[in-house]
Amino acid sequence: MASSSGTSSGSTHLPNSGSEEDLQMVMNQRKQKRMLSNRESARRSRMRKQKHLDDLLAQVNQLRKENSQIITSLNITTQHYSRFESENSVLRTQMIELSTRLQSLNEIIHYMNNGGGNNANGVFYDETQAATFDGFSMNPWNNNLFCVNQPIMASADIFQY
Image 1: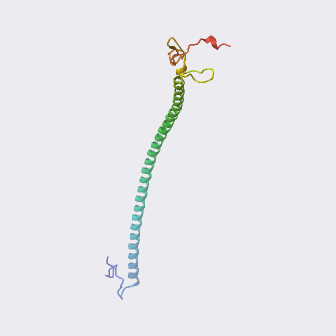
Image 2: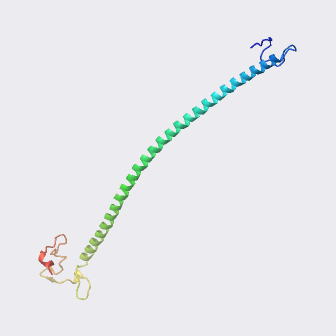
Image 3: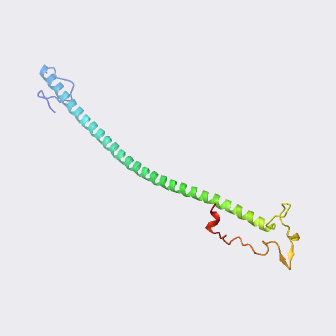
């Protein structure tokens, strides 16, 4: 840019014949140029800040979406855990019940294998000493006279006092 005195605006050397007016005009031009540069720099800074803010908002939205999916997954997993814990509790109870039944049945089998009854001395029957009558053992367990799997029938009148 040329000044009215014929010198360039970038020149710091003024001719000796220059007036105070020329100096003031050069300083005003520099000031204007600096103001435009500052405005442009501020505009770029605001644009960078706005872009950074937009990026952060997009990241917040993405993290909220992921958080929502994780919470949903956690709720489903918690429901499955509760259901499996409940089923496990039922199965443990059934296992204890079946173990008790098995132990009772093993005791019955042991009792049956050892003669099934007591003699006067409180000792289990010994099959070698069991009395026989015409080849028929007096031990009811050996004769299948008593079957464990048959129901016991009773009438209601036996429960009246």
